[in-house]
Amino acid sequence: MLLNSVILQVAAVVGAAAPPRPVVPLQAFDPSMILDMPASIRAVVAFLASVVFGGIVIYRYGDRVAAAVDASTKSPLLSVLYGFIAYGLVSFVVAYAYLQLAGLGVGTSVATAVGAVVLGSALLSLGGLGFVVVGSWLTNVLGLQEPWLGLVGVALVTAVAVLVLPLVAGVLVWFSVAAVGIGGPVRRWIHADSVERRAEEH
Image (cartoon, rainbow, N blue to C red; front, side, top):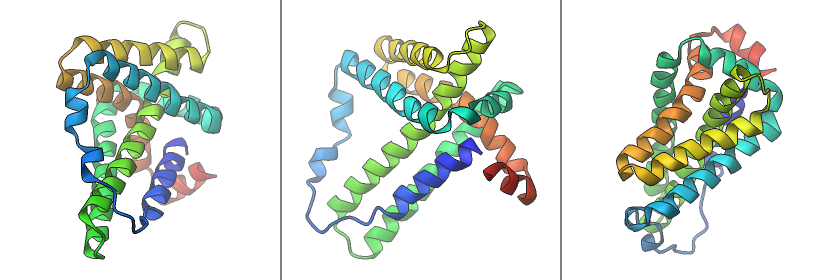
């Protein structure tokens, strides 16, 4: 299953996230950097992140995208809900790993740096999956059957939203669009029994 493969890769990153001992300055990951960043730069970063992570999904799991599109288009509103559930689950896993690192005596700066990188990569990976699914859905409706074109188009639209809307609203649009594409596979996976899950993984 496409979503399960992405989640397994995220889990592998979290599991391999034991950091080296050198101290990383906490200021290097100061969230205020994003707040102070010009909207135009944030829009470019959002566009590039969407295309890069979505491109990885197309390259590695392109043959499974159709099933994800089918799952998400059956109920787009429910897909949004389940998409945000996926974000929450990933955030919980990363937060738990952060607490484990802190409990092992890893420095706060190092743990925070690793947590920020892993969480960002995980959310962007899920976002890339969501953008590919939504983009493929739209290009299928238009009869183009080209996932790359759909990915770039959706990434461009959401980048414009990040550019013209306030920061919080732009981020919400980005994650909401991606959630539509993520939620269908998540909903199908959650409600599948163990036999169906094993069948989808192979």
